[in-house]
Image (cartoon, rainbow over all chains, first blue to last red; front, side, top):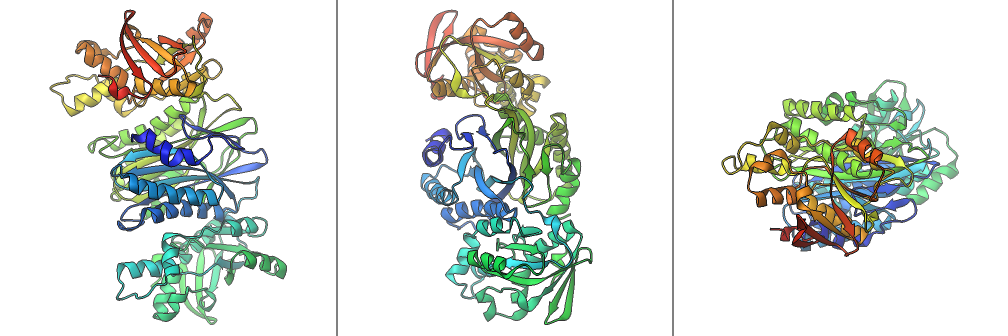
Length: 319
Length: 319
């Protein structure tokens, strides 16, 4: 099979070449989309590189899932609905078995979100995957990092630290024993919080997905919104395995580990209980702190006793 | 400098974060675009990998130029106006001097086309560059591969074979001497035919850019349009250096060499001379053959004597 035959067999045939707002999909010099008049287009691009973002031994199905999921997560953080994707896949050789497994997993996750693959590139080289994702939102409704206000409550979805713990466990199973299968799954197959993002669209004042760790990513919100934050460490939703390890290490993994792809968002304090319950019906959320007016200053408290200051970008200072 | 500082210093600061239809540029989880109501969005993505699409010794300025130019060329082939780009740059190390040269060339070419860089990713790994480009066209006006009709004249812009010859010259300067500096430039810094594409928007019945070679790319038009073609070899606009080499090799380089990034297009025969002259005022064009109703069959003629049949996809059969 040559490049065109591989694309056609494993990818193109799995998607319509025109559907709804998609005027032209895979197979020309470019794709053509008619973005609905009442919508704004929301775009993000992420690359995963072998040996850097995933292990050389990671299964093709997991690489495919994660490469799409991390892009879905960016769309979730904007409160948008994902629609169209481009895939740039660089492979060291034409291993059709590997490509079939990759494509099967990629296409399945795409189908679950009603995404259409509209183009991309298949090239020879060291293994890496770049996905560009396009979503839509009602005009002016996209969530940004810049809208947090003093007094807003800070929330995160799900639990934190599972992916970081699973990563440590794969690297060193003696020092970091027994990550649950579910936690390993969180590393390889993160669950982009699309539904939560859409539910937050009319409520949250800011939102970000946690890819680099809570401290780093909340730091981006603080910097963009020109506000500060106070977090209560005991309110952080630690992942189950972290409860069995040294407390300081658990805090570090949950706050700086990254790869969780949960959402961190701010909402005005005192929202009706019904709205919070609606969020809870989609996925668990935890109130972890409050926004204040101290520009880009992040304070971590432990049962109300101040223990650490970190500036918005200095998550590496957190030890 | 960390990832964020590099992006900010070398890329983000060179572009507006909001401008016209761009609501939000670099710096959030995703960018936000308001595509004009009367426009369709035209999207393409291309990857260049070190050692595959460019030499390990190619200058960062040339890599940057080409990575953007090949994407611009896809937009040109659709007759569209380029607007927004995402850049996924994978680098083996943080060589700030290399990054500065790359960024300077990339940003300069982007500025020449009034493009705004709206996002992307900077990752560690073997050198590769993926660009996703977004253009717009009046709704329904994008050129496709599928519209060629029997009787249409086949044209190409510029001259063919320069990039392929320059490539051979770099690989083996004894066997392939003296590519002109202009020809080497065609390999490293192809000139995307944006203005020609836009001028063709209301006239051409099909269009493609020549990235894989004339035979292969015209073959895509024939397959998509379910038509055949007859080319007159003496009408091919051979690049200057090809005139000094063996005639058969010249034909091979011009017809299968690729990397020219000229446009191949079809227009109804007998267009008013004034329209053709308008094209010529933008860049030279050459009439090289005619579309017929023989499904995907390509016939090459030499001064009206039939010399070779090639099917639409079998350009590798051309020897």
